[in-house]
Length: 119
Figure 1 (cartoon, rainbow, N blue to C red):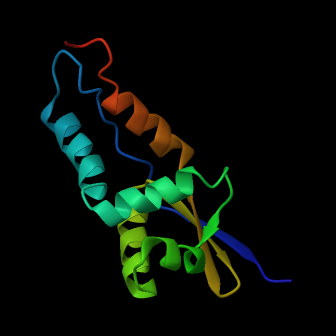
Figure 2 (figure 1 turned 180 degrees about the horizontal axis):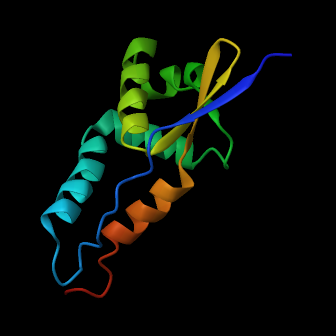
């Protein structure tokens, strides 16, 4: 039986919630990097597919058709999400499987929580 390799980029850098009284330059930079990784509609759609996969890792081959993108393009976007620490990658034989990073989901939720701030 083949080996299973799980790859994850470094965890998402420490960000501060957007409703923090003050953001340091480093916190603002880390937060901007997180949002940059999601600044492409294809990456947002990938995160959506992974988020609705019931916690199961999804083969890159199963992302091509729902996204309507070529396999190299899907792989490019997944590489960007991996570099940002938003997804984890498992190598199963010749196929790569992706899932959302639990730490990244928690960080993204806390950074973007603006409930009760205004309006």
